[in-house]
Length: 80
Image (cartoon, rainbow, N blue to C red):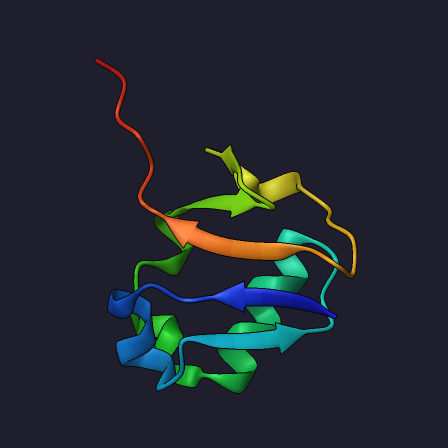
């Protein structure tokens, strides 16, 4: 199972720093996380970038990942 590690900001909504998930793509991941942690629906989680095994992905909407993935939600970098 993939592991999602939450920042302290997101942990306010989840009550935990990490969770194992069955999802293997971004859309399923968001659905699974909101199903398990309904308060995440009120967070900015859909607006964040994602780090997948240490690689930053600014637009994670279409990504897929392996069962062994480590995922982090991080603020998107602004262009400038």
